[in-house]
Length: 575
Image (cartoon, rainbow, N blue to C red):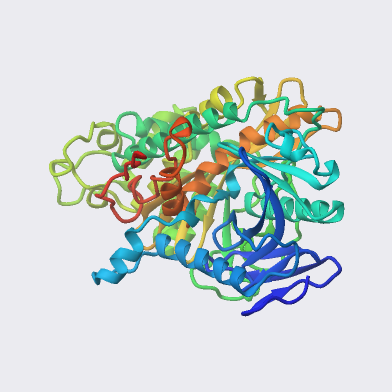
């Protein structure tokens, strides 16, 4: 494709890849072809024929937008040739519309208000990348099997199957169709961090996309409600039974806890980094059975990740001491850290040497070590304070005033099975309802505590396996605390990876991966820059296809970060 006008840059005739960064900080390594034009380094444009429910197919500009992670199609001059000046202007108008919707200008002038409030017909012609569930070769949908699609060549046609609709396309030739499908799959994999699996179809689709749409609705509601419940538990310090959970679960799960220091890519292992704890220096990379490096690794953001807790010896006492020492080295001063480890060691020795009750001994340790008693005759003990029901915020004591080192306690109280159970129920009972799964053993559960310069992340990683051992997967529940105030910023549930055996049928692979991708879809929806545009799009759907808009929720509306007192925007009925 030749170079386009007005600043567009086209790809070379042979397949190639380019790397660029969008405004959200994401770095893309994109496959481009001789059929794709790249505009402003963020939008891939290719001309295709779009088949619809009515009328004949029309040539359209299919735009792959890496900034807003979506696909949209615009009117063309009905010529499968180079992109014209007018078509460039149409793409620019769409870009401005999306930018204005997602970043409204705070201007009370009549001109701006009119521009932002006026319905834009361009907004309805797009699909979000996280709504795609399949890319099907040939003429398998009802639209492509209409009489208008009979003249189209089978090898040039394909359909993008989404939750609420299909996008049925006809490329210029077989090579263009193959290259475009490859580019779309590459785009999807980089965004969703997993490949898009398609199963072979005979003559028509052998599944109903509406079933996945219903599941997506259910998962969205249950996951967002789980976020709210976990946040409420954290604010109320988990209400009743929290102390017992810490005392019982910390010794039992300490062997599964791993503590990491995240350094910048330019920092040396032995360098003195801000807030860096012990454990620096060159270390040999040694992977455990879960496939995660025990000493050093690299995050997706390019940060160096060093494990700072000591190598564990056998016995629960060594594990709880190693975890406490590493946490204390990052959260308190050196003198206080030595005091915490010394007091905990006395409690461990009392249990192991004199056969005392572990729960009673550790309850006494937490009560004496973390509760502020000096000068307060009515100060509650650790167990008493955590066990009371907190209803009235004005009358309830503030844990910052009642505790020493409440940051450390905030970490420990999310290191238990109690917060993970709701996630497991959502994954097993709702997401993977047709399948039976069980815990992966050994090394099927880890708790990673990652220290950054401005935040701390506590992630519970759980790996499950199909009872017939056809597939396994790992999901993660992550709590992010902002420093130095140590407020809860966000709670996220994601599926990290899915692994299939070679004998697993392709039909099951597609179904399982699609179901688990709907879990990650909730996170993508909450952080997507297209929340507003997708809400506007829902207003243009036909009355027979009016699904409830998913994207009116955001992290702020869930109570994370800034408060949102505006509530959800109601969908406008079409008149």
